Image (cartoon, rainbow, N blue to C red; front, side):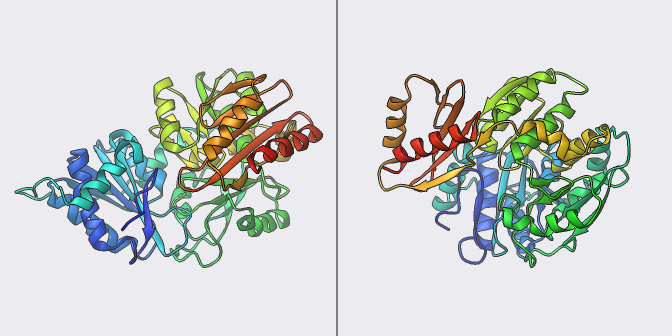
Length: 440
């Protein structure tokens, strides 16, 4: 059980770190900590999600809370159900993009407000470890089944404003995108890859961040006539995109396009991941929005969005957050936004993206370090005092023609660099300069 309580969720290898007994105890601890009375519970297609559901629900109901079982569902669907059904908490049983032997729990309060390590996961771990549960209820809670999909379908459809038909290719990776995409039936059309549900993920890892997993999608798009291609992760709260030529689109540029669609009908704050290209901020402002920078991590981003009543936020990892889905992810809405944009243009997606590729980015470069990562941040602070330095997440420094961000991993001696410049030569020179300090 040690080590399964993470910064953003609970996750471990089934049968080893995460067993039915642990799930049962987590159910009891969850109700003890949150004090909830009505809990939405959903699960992904992994074979062990079923026994984990039974054990978790037993723990929840023994504490007197009711379980609304929405069955197999994407993570965005679980967030929507949490907010729509008047629940005061939810649990999504999934290990997201992790391999098939993994499973876990994503925890939320009412209105899909996430519970992170800092806001409750460590407290739940303590209750589980110490066994300090509240007394079992005299009358246990009840389990009732509910099909949330029809309401989610109706909700997503109201944001469709296509001017012409859009046909796409979608790699489902045998995961929960098969459920999430049902919202788009009758709005767009698609040809699918790996669209048989299989929680063993037999074809490839369900992780669009790893470009190797996109090869099948790229090949399909290049052989057909598609507006673009989509790749889901395992629980469908993330999506990766390729253009009509099969070229991978950086996820910060997707943020810029989705922001344009969101801002087409209203004005407001749009958050962008601090690792994003300068062009994202420029596009948001040009579309009439108020660009604001977010730190990395879904719990932080959602909190910032709520504080500023933001309409949308995009993260470099492929998470796209919508006020319209209780300030949580909806890959269906992200796909729909791209379809809206493409349908209104006489240009293909690659031509819409081309003007956004105006700067030169290093990509995220991870370095395992032997010295204290905080000492590296201190050295960077001293070295770059002539730039605009801020510490929203790690150390960021901006100059007129380049910028960088360096962050430390919370779990290992790892330092992450993202850097961008107005020319390739400047990017490469400054990248090597900063890396020399990191790797000294």
